[in-house]
Length: 534
Image (cartoon, rainbow, N blue to C red; front, side, top):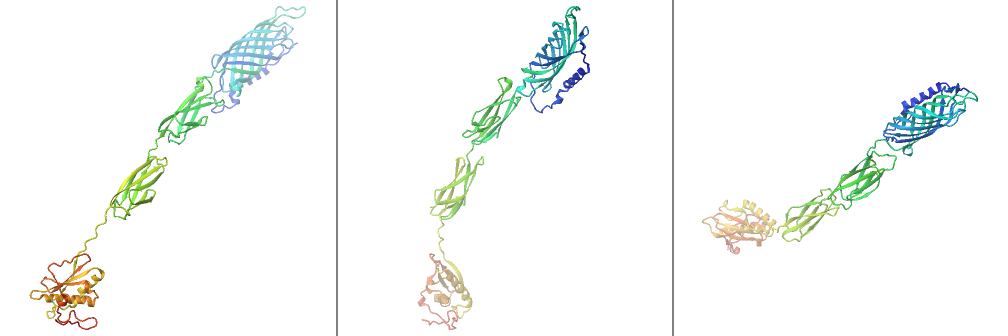
């Protein structure tokens, strides 16, 4: 029986296959940044195979399609592109024939992400049965074709699907001489066929050039004080993010907490200096699957504060106060607390300013100490001195002259106190009233040719005006005669404790004074004052 199949079916299949091979990546976008898919060393394929003889016959008896077949192959690659393949085709039975192949030859591939198109040319043995019950005998055959695999994104890229493999298959088998009596049992098979296959590929090994893993890490902040945390962040390159990545961390100082690509380092109790954190990443035992990194951080020494101390004013009298000012500086701007102490007196204040009260302190230097302490317990002190100066001694009272009275205007009454003289005496009275503890010395003087009695009378008349008209206590006024040689009365104010500067004068015995006429004119009552001469 003849069975023929037109070529358009094969052409259509090959056209579809060519589209896949030419642009296999067009059916799936490549994820940006995805790691490269490994390229296998050995591929094991098993799948279904359909063999369709094309216009092949013995004595016009045509071979029929073999729809139940299996195709097995083992492929080993020398590099990323070229390899050798051993393939076996099993088509055990058809309507009246069988086809077995055992062939090998070169293969070439070009992997594009997960798509792997390939072409191969194979040659070897072919065992074929005839369409008229010729027995299956061995001959030789040639296979050439192409196909494409899709690597599944599971099982670490070990499995791929081969959606199609299309081959041209030529088989040459000599069945022996034709035996016409009893039927055809011999003849020559020259089979041209196309074969379509599909199945599963198991991929072994890795031809992809190994990219060495690298690990970088950084410590932030890079400089801290003891007790402040440090964060170490790492970044690994060249590892498969879909597989587990193991991180290991060590440090030359401090306690590491956390795991994975980011950890923290506690710096409690660390001395000042430089420390190193080392990291290691691993995704396998091979060298290119491991990497290390290191990061440094600095522990700064918390320097103690400094302080200055000053007093204003620096000298005071007993009982007076001085302002104490302290200025503390922390190199690391730590919080500061101030306190004060003193060797004498009392001190109190707030923040960095205090007041020293020197009450009760004896003259001499008082030492004030200014203290400052930071939040880490580090202290500093400074001192300043306040000098207690003794109070100055009370000024020694001295006598001082007041205004003088002139008796030159009235020659007829040379001892009488006139109005001009009263003006002076009014001022003297006011001074005595203001300085109630002072006394007055009135010194009468006489011109040449005049008597001492006249000088005494002049002083007495002036006193009478003060006591009778101005209410000055007579006990506060002392009369003396002087030797100025003028017709006058000098007034000398003598404060308590002062001595009268009355050198060259003589005391007056007031009871012995003789008055001539009015002492000073009319009194307030209008009656003249008269005294009889003794």
